[in-house]
Image (tube, helix red, strand yellow):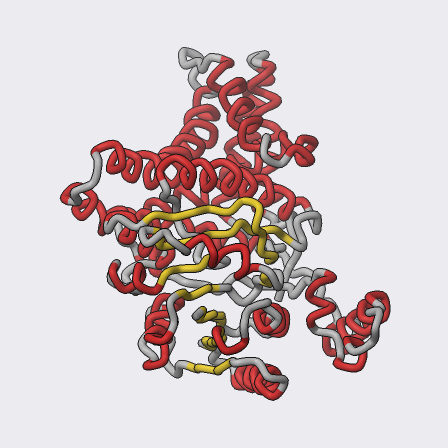
Length: 458
């Protein structure tokens, strides 16, 4: 018995795709129930989602629509309220998909069987694949990071210690594991990481399936990506403060505690952003103005190049972008460092939750799922006809593409001025390798500061 949840909030660009994909899951109809958990405060979006749910219900899908008037606790509050329904006790597992995720029909057949004869298993997590990874330079650079996250971090941790961070979507939980770990909590903006840590401390094991994919979207605008990264880096620091006493007191092996504290929390979310920001954005440019100070080439060049090379290995097709990736990661360290500080010291922006803007990119599978009934009944489905209908719908006057409105990011522009000034200084003092790095890094900050990377998604 599988409960499927789709939490969403004002996401009218993608609600049809996700509902269609979930309603097409290959699972006995009597053993599955879909909950569409709508937090939208826009009446038009609410009515559109409600109509879509009703359409699928009339077609025989077991699906219910739930709407909250007050959006307390954001996604965690939404999931928590949904789990309090009386009928949830009839279900053993719950699959969660964010609004832009489109599971393949065989998703449950590849994930749920792992729970059989394994009473200690609490979570089965699938990897993400991206329908728009080649859309622009920003999405290509994000794809590098996320390929490393899934291929290395999630897979290695899943194999060796049966623990990793829940990605918040494209996963199946044993409901007993959720309840045993205290359920969804609204204390941070990373409810997925929170429940994963508590389940791990309670002895539950996780399995990561790198060969089971779930399609989704990457943010296509820098503003959307910046806000997403702020939440992804401030939330873990909030959670670290709250969980540290529990981790220390917990009766698990010492090496597991060390892994949780140093690798899971501190390395990727605190140490690396701090290292990138202070070394490349502050210390290196300042040394250009102090003749006595000198950084060795291996600090400036070889270590960053090696780290970028290792990060890009899981995405070999992205090797041409290794230099833009290194420069962009250093540029993003400003946002990540700021988020880390706000989360660690409980500043106001740490509790900010902004829904990531979606563009509604459709894969061929989505187009088939959304095809009109008369097209589906044909013996051979003409995918070209569906694409033409989809393109006509997208090109209607009310869906015309809006022109890009550039934002100005003052921190990035200030740092670009510092780096370019330091580059000029290094040129005068004939420090070749420093000059090239500072010049390109300064230009990278300038492009981001003027919002010239990515697209604007209103």
